[in-house]
Length: 147
Image (spheres, rainbow, N blue to C red):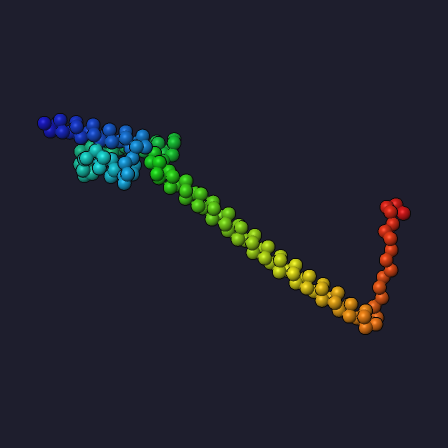
């Protein structure tokens, strides 16, 4: 009977391993040793002591799957993809903030220059009206090119 229990536990472990590696991961579990034990209904200590070859096979398959196709757990793969997307968006947001700062600085500079020019025009108009030493330039028609 102990051999039957041993064979039954080993077959449950292998079936659970195949299920996890196929990406069919029940809610609340992950693609790891703990979930393998839970899914196969084999205590983790028993897995480590009695079935180290299955544990090693699972870890090898998991490593190969990660190298070839990425994370076999679709939720973990989605988390990694979302983390990369968040990092990309943070970079874009930082760049946009910098561009907004530069645009605000340009606007401030342009407005101050316009105010200075307006003040100069007003000063010149007042000086002209008061008969200051200001002469207006004659208006000339633009010459055609080549003349």
